[in-house]
Length: 359
Image 1 (cartoon, rainbow, N blue to C red):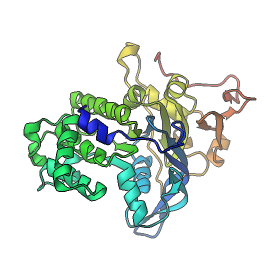
Image 2 (image 1 turned 90 degrees about the vertical axis):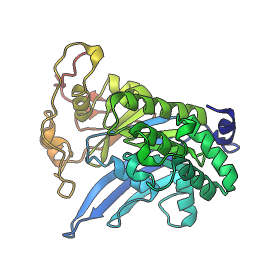
Image 3 (image 1 turned 180 degrees about the horizontal axis):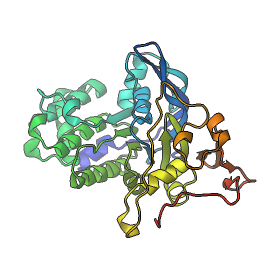
Image 4 (image 1 turned 45 degrees about the vertical axis):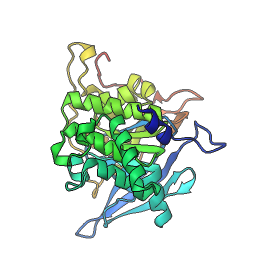
């Protein structure tokens, strides 16, 4: 990392701020969309999520689970037919659900996003250095000369060689474009960085390079990182905490070590059982049968019940409560009860568990 860029872009906490307190905190967020036939589809249903400085939080789940809708709600990018029905999104105590230009500035200066599909996200007729410089001029009020110099340093930091600074997006490889997107995101020294499937469509070598870069930027800039992905191996390698999302709800959350070493929710177990693991040797990959439910016609009870091999009548009729049994460790499953200060224990004995193989 270049010294000049590092001095300008390392995020300092406000005086009196606690490094362990959340930068971004989501409480009871509920988001829905109106369909063309008038029905409402609930894409996010009462989730809680937070990220602290220098912390990496993974949000995982199948396609359609609501992960990207969470990003849209945070950044004010919901489609015209979408709305936030309930809950709060707070950045350092500031309510981002309220409307107004100051909040738009907060979103794009203090919270930044690296989207998938960099060829679409970048302007095809503007050189990459100019795109980074323009963001610095508009959001930080720097002169064109200063913005160009800062853009040069930022692009160097993310691995764009100087000879490619004046290239157009289509002249860059997919990995280079994603690096340029990261430079745009970092241009305003955000406190929170969101990676929304940032390595989709990249080959595995480039994926590893981009993820390593994201992790380095998080540590060097002191960013709170929210990483949205369906790849549990990425979360295991990069994140401190993980939230598992299914059909708009977070079904299990906690430290990566806690959740991945002792998954309790059947959906988390199924995801881990379906993930290949070279370290585990030869083992059977468990296929998760069925499909996620239609969010406009959700079944009663637990949303996962139609696919769950452990579901009983109660699971199919009643919503499971979310229990918090340790600091920021939660579970939503009828199959467990909360002991006195102990982790949840299975209600039934003997309790059938899903085979995961040796992990």
